[in-house]
Length: 238
Image (cartoon, rainbow, N blue to C red):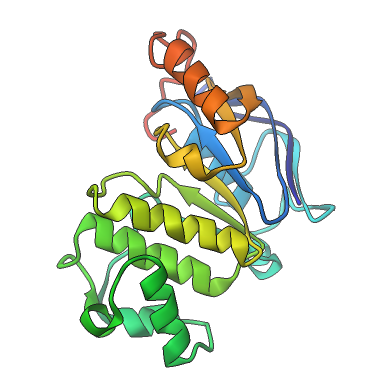
């Protein structure tokens, strides 16, 4: 469904993405596991069209979308959930989930229940700084689910959340796959990729290993968490 081929990106003379290959299959959860600075967010930005690669191609449903705009990719069914969810002063959660989506009230409530947010408590709350980090991430995930994308790119959905929110986030991701969406789950957490069918490990802008979650988590712990990542991109935000 989504295939990245020989992708390369250089910033300020430094290789950020270095000949990366990756495939995300239809209605499957594919984990992308890597340490900070490995190139995870840069890859997400390339797939979504926020930036463009120097070399390589991005194929979505057998179409080359490498030079397509963000809006063109979104219309095709690609969506990206940011690591830091947006805040909308004065906009309620009910209104936020209905943006550009013709949802009934019961549908909105079902999405909130899926991510562990009781509608009676959250429907009319504002999407602002009064929500905790975990609540904001769950609202963002509910909104992505409501879009019913063909492929959802989730950038660190487990980052900056409380222990109560994590199982609800993971449940939402699993349900998204059940409703037919493919998910690229980007994280540095071994626990988070437990819901994936396949996990790829990224380091210095390359995929260095792929396989079942348990096997890849062991490999990551033994090889990535203990190494000094010589040659990794020293570019803030990658």
